[in-house]
Length: 561
Image (cartoon, rainbow, N blue to C red; front, side, top):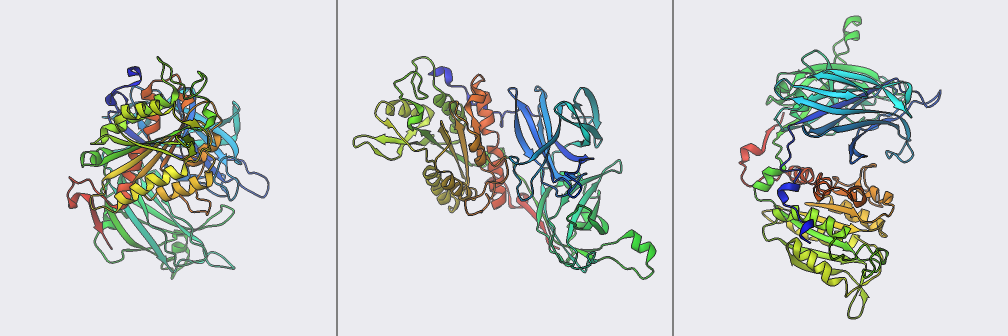
């Protein structure tokens, strides 16, 4: 069995990564064809990256309603690896009204490119769009036609702006309101939203954030939001920012209300309710007694120190690893060589490969290396009643031995219910959350051969767990159709409970083992664990929990106007 073990150092992609830099990608589109004479498209761009010859979704933009030339506020953050050819694919979809998923969306076109060499010293990097290699310097924008089935998709094009990030990882939390905005509607009040743009060194503008629309309100209060200082002002507190206020219209032809300019230095000044006059330049010229089109108020400004995964690990955070294995009858009789649970004397089965690849890494972050291990779907001796197996073992080797020892004694049965196990681990995570130290993070690895049978209960359990220090990794073993399992991953829209409650944060990663059947354990582990560091950081930062070794001054700096 030793051939399936690799050192954590060799497989720990998210710690010993040779990543040189991070790159922000901003996306805009032009010339998207209307659905028909009466309606415009509701576009969304999906970013995919290629791995082992297959495309996997990385992230997607928001949906912009009724727009043929959208400028998306969502920013894609991509790690750049010098030694890897990183193929990117930008897909444009028209999303059906009332549905943010892709299942019923219309595919409008795509553009493929390769993220190329990066020169950190000169801030130059290359993107290969289709067949031509183009050099991007700082804030250069590149536009290429979208392709559909190998042909140009009408007159539609996509524009990608790339920027290398500096080392400042701090975030700022901002909230704005407005007072007495101009009324642009005849039969109701304006529906205002606010946009913030960063002015770049070459005079171009980059959209930083777009607020939600507050309907029928001339004195709106917009929701607070967080944005990195890199994104907001490239780390330069004196960089000029332009803020514009619009009246939203359902046809996408929004009415301009006014604008003002400021800097982050001005925002963070300790003043009571910093205000700016919202000015419409046309009115300023035409109207003799014109004063302004309303006032925008900064209600809250707070700089938040963002810690890394390593900051928390080095500050004492422990990873509590739990594994759950599918013992349902669909796996086949373990005595049969065709069974997914068959123990070959020389070749580990898929369950063991996935278990060891992931567990070997996680156990290095657990000081006592004692793991809870569950089995579900089996009939247990001596009475052979249906219940979950539960043992507490030492290390991944202990899990492997417990797994091999139980197979001859149990009867594979069903159903494939995983909600009880998620609830069990969530209960432990909830207890940890209320302790004084609160520095344990729980990872649940579920290995299953088919689509689960308690989907509604599982969705409910995941939504509850998203509030806790916990992540769920699901590896699909065998050749079953796991399409429905992607729902849990949240990559096709926000996962919601049966009652409609959304997850607080994305905590589920689903990976089909067959995609890595011929790859190394390191490749599987890297894919399975890729999202965990960010999930850990997102949880602790959201809770305001800092690494133990950090001082109070380093954690947050607040400026309340």
